[in-house]
Structures are given as C-alpha cells and as structure tokens.
Image (cartoon, rainbow, N blue to C red; front, side, top):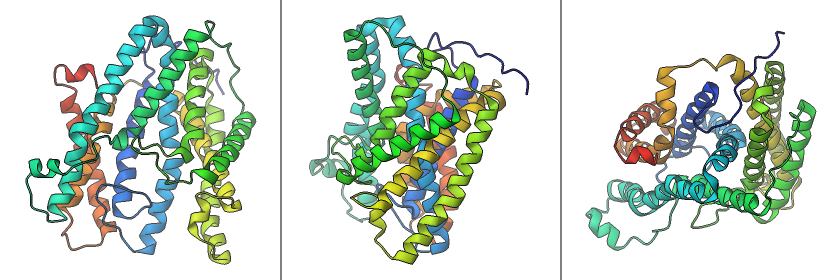
Length: 383
C-alpha cells in the first residue's frame, strides 16, 4: 500500500477536512432515518408513533436502530470534540464560552420554548382530535423545559463547560497520545462495555433524566468519545489514520453485527427470558448486549474514519452545502417527520410500508428546510 498522505493539522476550527464534513451529512441522515424507524415500529419513544406489528419488518427495523445507536451519537460527540481545543486556544475561555452559549444555548432555548410545544400540538390536535387552537393548547402546556432531540446539544454544552474548567485549572494541555492500534481500540471498547453494563444496573437503556433528556445508560460511550475527540485533536490522530486499519475495523464490525445480532434473537427464544434483561439490571444478557454494542460502535467509527480519509475526502460543493445545514437539519427534522407521519396516518397500508415513503421524504425535506434556514441573516450565525 502506498504511504498514507498527510492531512493538514487541526489548527483552526474552520479548516475542516472534507471527509469529516461528509461524515456529518451521513450521520444527520441516519438521525432522520433513526427517528422515522422509531415512529413506525422500531423500539424507542417519539412524539407520534404508528407501529407496525409485522415481525418481518420489526426485526430489520430493530437491527437498524440498534446498530445506529451503537455508534452514531457517540460519533457526533467525537467529531464535535475534534475542534474544541483549537477553538479554545484561539478565543480564550471567556470568548469561547460566550460563543458556545450562543451557538448551543440559544438553540436549546428556542427548541424548548418555541419548537417543542408545536411538535406536541401537531399530533394532539390532528391525531387526538382535540380541536383547540394553538393558544388554547399553550394554556394547558406544562412541559416548558423539554430539550427533545437537543439533549445532545445540552450534553455537548455540559461537556464543553467541564473542558473549559479543566483548561483553566490545568494550565498545561495533555501530552500527545500515540494512535491506538486495532487491539487497543477493541480492548477499550470492551472496557466501555463493562462500564456501560454497570451504569445500566441503575439506569437501564430507555431511562431518561428529565427534563434534559439524558439516557445515562449510553453516557459512558458519549463521555469517552468526547474525551477521545479532544485527545485525537491534540495528538493529530486523523493525520495518522490508515486505510488498512479502516478496512480491518469494517470487517470486525460486519462480523460482530451479522453474527452477534441474530444470536440475541436465537438465545432469547431458546431461554425465553424478558427482552428487558438486555437493557439493564444485574443480568448477563445486559452485559452481553453492552459489550456487543460498544464493539460495534467503536469498530464502525474507526472504520469510517480510516476509510473516509482515503475514499471520501474529495471536495464537493453539494456536500459542503449540506454539511453547512446539518445543525439546522438536526434541530428541525422532528417537525418534518411528525408532519409527514400525521399526514400519512389514514393511509390504508401497513406502517412498515409508510416508512419506505416517509423516511426518504423526511430526509429530503429536512435538508431543504435546513438549507433555507441557514440563509436567514442572523440565524445563520447560530446554526
């Protein structure tokens, strides 16, 4: 194999590597698909659901959201952390925090006080047939602190505050760390899996810390990947990412998914234990699932970084525009999914078939809306 070409160092947050932008677009598409799948049958909660009962549809839908959950939000934390140190170094603590509060805090306030009531009102009025005006609905609305899908933004803001405190107290930044090997990554994934299992004894998957929306059962991965993103930035890991490592991790991810996921169904049917034992408590099934999840997650993330650097690093004006809109898309995609699913509620076909129409339509409309939003003066300084 030819010698890996060097990438520019992460000196300034605006000097983005092309494939990182492309990965952001891919992850945002997965977020829209993930919530669409939940709306029509996959496990999880959503504003409005119309779940299918077809086993032939539920199994692949469950597999999709399980694999997604194993990596996509953790990957967002990793990518977000990549540009935190350079931004802090350039702006200093005061300006950096002020900027973070504007870019992360304002969307939280907007979502909680403006968008969230609208998202709840749509199914309440049109599906529940409580035909009242929006102002009447607001009169009885009491969930004013509701971050919804922006729990991620709230967590990112919290992690950023902790990082700033660390930098203020510890004047010196941490030393560089060598690029982890495949073995190191897998061992680390196992450790995070065990830690996740311990956390899920108290906070099982699905348990939500209200009103911020944190599912603490997933936070060992989120915290670790945010920290790894900081280390990767300092140590220039992206410069040393190798294509062969990406391919090896892709093979590992495929094996763990294609062999491991069917085993969950086989073992569960053989032993006939509650599905909830996979999600938490002092059960070996919970340990098994937690370790599987982290192996899948870290393998997929590593493969995308390694392969992406060599296959997806070409500049693209189209993808650059989409990447610029991803934050706006993330904020507003629930409005699109809920509106589409409510409009399709009386369509006389199985919800699994509706998913095939609603999901791709939601992706297209969400990005069109996001592209329009980032063109609004003033708003584009926040999103």
